[in-house]
Amino acid sequence: MAGEKSSPDDTHSSRVIRVVFLALLLDLLGFTLILPLLPSILDHYSKTGDSVYLSLQSVVDWFRGSVGIPLERKYTSVLFGGLIGSLYSLLQFISAPVIGAASDQYGRRPLLLLTTVGLIFSYILWAVSHSFSVFLLSRVVGGICKGNVSLCTAVVADLPCPKARNRGMDTAELKGIQKIGDLLNPVALFNFSAVTRTKEPPAKERMRNLKVLGLVYFTYLFLFSGLEFTLSFLTHQRFQFSSMQQGKMFFFIGITMAAFQGGYARRIQPAQQIRTVRMAILLLIPAFILIGIAWNLILLYISLLLYSFAAAIVVPCLSAQVSGHGTASQKGTVMGILRSLGALARALGPVVASSVYWLAGAEMCFIISSAFFIAPLILLSRLEEHKED
Image 1: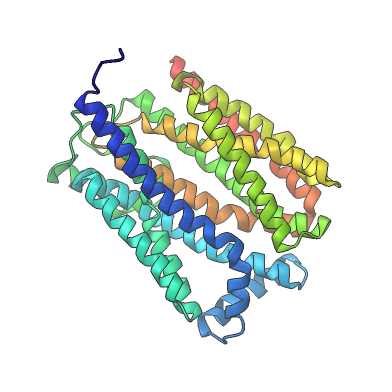
Image 2: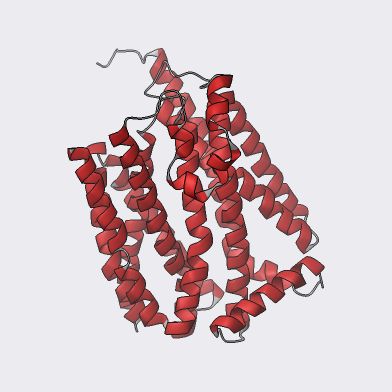
């Protein structure tokens, strides 16, 4: 009704969402701002003779020679940036489940504040870095604190639970799940072992579904991030894109993703999310095939439109599905593990995809990788069977 006042819970939820939005905006701006500048940054540090830079350059040169990548400045720059990106993702893989579990124990607010301050510090380090070593340190600090994204998801997931505890587990429970192997061992992460060891583990059916969702998330991001990384190779090799043209292409992708997320993704009802994820992944198969065979810009941008739709839908919907699992005292752990699996996928995917790209060619890389998107679709069908059990 027009004169009806908002309840205290609604007011609190709105305030929390605003804070989470600002935290994510700060994180997103810091993460995306560096992407178009990275080639120039690496070119600058290549002239300083920094010992850390030269060590990493030798790793890039070894990999380039192993898979037959041409000795061209553009390719070397992309590979070097990919190496730094993999390091960034590996650090998220380590930190995300630890930060999530710690937030269940010590509360979301102090951990969110700590990680946000850490991100700000990493940006300051980047701004004042006069050597590659300090620049790399800023990426290390940023990668460790990037686990706050899963923390923000857990904060929002807590909102429908007004009785959720700010400190989720007592010391006895903490001893049960906080074994470091459960949070750092990939096998334990895929099994969500840190969740099953709690006093109140999810029911077996829901636990099976959670594991399936984790596998879908990892498989999808492993394939997607690899093809996303090699897209720069393809457009430079086939269309001779300059850095400015690459920037315009990714700007187009970003704008269309934002439009799909704002206009469509946020309206998807929870009961329809899995069906929508399946549709988006199905669209990715022709999208990446078309990218692989595109010999004109019209066909390329049509395929990028399909690509952007899937990119805008899959991860938010899967994250929302996963956030519905576990008790209020487990949300941080659950979302931290999911974020960790995604970071591991983003660390491995570009290395594998770029190897296939240069060993088998652009067309075969995109066509073969597209076929493997059947794997998450099969996993999603298993999830439906579990729901019906």
